Structure formats: C-alpha cells, structure tokens
Length: 491
Image 1 (cartoon, rainbow, N blue to C red):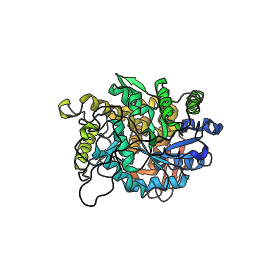
Image 2 (image 1 turned 120 degrees about the horizontal axis):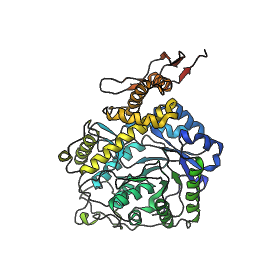
Image 3 (image 1 turned 90 degrees about the vertical axis):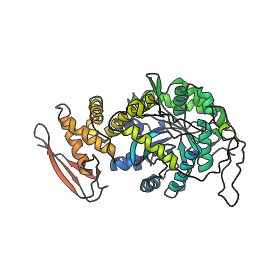
Image 4 (image 1 turned 120 degrees about the vertical axis):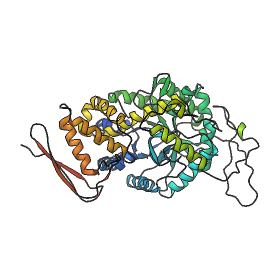
C-alpha cells in the first residue's frame, strides 16, 4: 500500500511544522508569520465564538488552516450529530482547508455529554462504529482528506480484543482515512501501560500516517498526562524521530493550550521538530501484507483486509483465530458500555468503588478529575476580559464546576456564565466579569432549570453599570451568529 500523500504537500513536506492557533500566541505569530508553515484551529471554538471564526477566516489568508474537531464523537455507537458534521463541513469550505481532522473517540453516550475525548474499547465492534460514523460524516464534509487521531487513554476497558496498534489498523482499513498520529498520546499510553513506547508506536499502521501531533505532559501521582500545557519532553521528540525513521518526514503540529511560555521557548520546540523532520530519510513506500477474512455465504459488503499482528500491546490477533469477523454490525453492546462510562464520568456525585465495576476505580476517579479540569479549561476562553486574571479565575472556576452538575448542552458557555457570576462578587475581578457576563448574555439564553443554555436568536440590548459608575452597553441583531457590539461611552 503506498504511503499517503501529505495533505499539506503544497507547502512542501520536509520540515513542515505548524502550531495550534490560540489567542495567547496570536501577536507573536502574526508578527513573525514565517515561524510556522500552517496552523490548526479547534472547530468547536469557531462554532462557539463568531469572533474566533472571523479570526480563523482572516488567518487563512496567511497560512493553510486545518480545522480540528473535538466533539463529533466518531466513536459513538449511537451515531454522530449530523448538524455538527454539516457545520464542520461549512467551516472547512469557508477556510479552504486542505485537510480536516477528528478523533477516534466518543464524547457522549446514553444521551449524556461527557465533555472529554474518551478512548474506545479496542474491539472490532468499536472499529465498525467508527467506520459507520465516518461514512456519515463524509457526506457533510468537502472532498478533502479526513485524518483520524488516536486518543490518550485515562480509562481502560476490560476485555479488549485487539492491541492498540491493531485497533487503529482496523480503523484505517475500514474507513479509508489516514491517521493523524499523536505521538504524545502514544507515549502517554505506553508509559501508563508499562510498555516500551517504541514497541507500541511500531505496532501502529505507520504506512497510513499523514500528519503528526506532538505535545508536552506531566507525571502526576504516577500517571503521565498529555496536558498540552508543558514543554515537549525529550522522549516524545525521540519517539518522533523513531517514527520518521520509518515513514520519512511528515507535517508536524505542536499543540500548546495552556501555561504559555515566552514565544521563544515555543520557537525552540518548533525548531527541534523541524530539525528532526529534515534529518529523517526520504519517505519510503511502506507496505503491509494482508490477510483475507472468510466471508458469509451469499452477497456481502466488501470488507478491508486485516494486517498481521505487529509488536505492541498483547492479545491482538490471537483472540481472532478461527473467529472470522462475520457477525452483523450491531452497536447494542457498545452503546450499553458507552452509556455506562458516560454515567460514571458525569454523575454529580462520586460513585462508590463498588459501583464502578468492571472498570478500575482509580481510573474512573482520575477521569472524573480530568473532566472537572477540562470544564474550566473550556470555559476560560469565553471570558476574554478576565483573561489577565487567569490564575485567580481558574481557581474560582474549579470551585464553580465542582459545585455544579454538567449542563446537558453548551457546557462551556453555562460554566463560563457561572464563573463570571461568581467573579462579579470579587471586587478585584468585578469590572471585567460584568462585561464578560454581559457579552455571554447577549449571545445566549439561560441557564434553564437543568443548567442548559441555548443560542439567542432574537435581538438583544442591555446595559450594565460597572463599579465606579461607568456604563457599558451590549447590542446584538437578529440571529444567533449576529455580531455583538459593546459600547462603552466615555464619561
């Protein structure tokens, strides 16, 4: 099988490095646009903020922009939200995106929003669910490559039938999509499972990798978290070099979402990644022998072939011997386990250890803590006036989300409204919090009794009086995407 052509080959492949475009990096990137070759934007940030969407459209005139989805839930047994897929397709067309990416994960189950990318069980049933959802999503996306990213695991499913690498081989075979290989996630999964990262990455279908993600992390209580808020560690760069020794150079995206250092530090990481890519051998054409599945008698849909076992996590192909993949595609068992996981992770109270079986109680507690932190991280970008007080607001936000159940929809907006309301009572934060709350109220209605909010369709006009007597007005026209104007009359 020929190695996939880079979706960013139009800007050259050798040494191509990009970065996630974030408000904290905007000034440095715009003052030195040659520092990177492309940028990535989080699609959901563009959906939630018209200003972020306008910014993404503007920077598409400077760099190729890759929309990166985080909530399509391609691994959900219940299917995907086609309206979300259509919005993702519209964004891709608006940005003239050369490629779009999403995760092999689920973010909702049993009607509950988890709010975090949750890895799938490594089973054929899960791979079939991904393939069905990718086929549905493609109908709404433009004719550009869809890359699928491997997920970090904080919760292990008992009874996985496949090794991690073999599972992703199934996914690319069944979907026809190439991989966005997150080397940081591979490293995290290997360290936390007690296996060699080089062995694990070698088990992946490297011949189907079209782009790379790298990011930093930290060890907390003996567990490695891929945080996107720390420097890329040397072992991750070493793993990147090992991948390139097999694949040749590919586009690299540096992810940094928090605790931003001076830009010179990020530029040094970009330079390191670029040097690794340039020192890699010219990309070979990797091949992978195949095994053919037996099929049922009578007409059937053509199934892709299976790769032979590769080194990595154990218990992959041995469980499939004399057990051809001939069962009809049924998602009921997967739907049941995803609903169970969603309930465990989003329940307002911590489940007792005996209630989490067959999952590991420590895994569940860790995943719940990550979700709490993720809610704060998602809400803070919606509070731009409070951003200079990020540390104090983050502490306040942690208290707010801990005391509030997760909203069933637009959780980040609902949490941002809670945090702004709490900040209004703090004299140091009140002026900025009042303005941020006013801007959110201009664009959203709620919260309702269940904590949910919804986009505001009707026009909005309101004023708020700040400490000291100054008045600010927010005005919005008809429609949920109408621009909000903030008027601050001079005294």
